[in-house]
Amino acid sequence: MVKINIKPLNDRVLVEPLPVENKTSTGIIIPETAKEKSQEGIVIAVGNGKNNSKMTVKVGNKVLFGKYSGTEIKINNKVYLIMYENDIFAIINN
Image 1 (cartoon, helix red, strand yellow):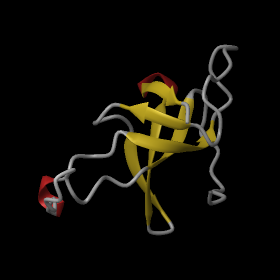
Image 2 (cartoon, rainbow, N blue to C red):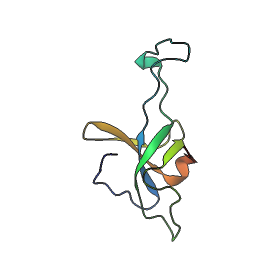
Image 3 (cartoon, rainbow, N blue to C red):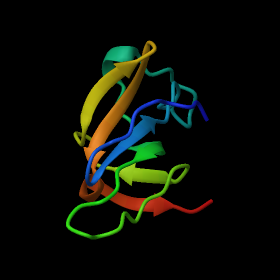
Image 4 (tube, rainbow, N blue to C red):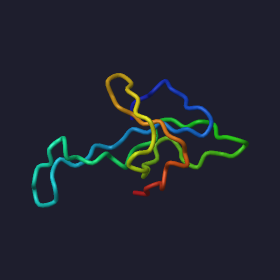
């Protein structure tokens, strides 16, 4: 995991989206224009929470979020999403 020098405010979370598949299960290559946005990612940084409520997600958690959740930001030529914690649907346990 890359060290990022960003601290989200309040109940926001910085997420690194996981790459989407390039092929279907049958081996058909998916062109860039037809790829879906990633809905899974790794939490990179977490805010302190809001109104005295603690954050549920922690740095390093693999999470599931909505297709259109968050705002894309570019840091060192890499795309991240910054979103509210309530935009995250679940923590994925491995």
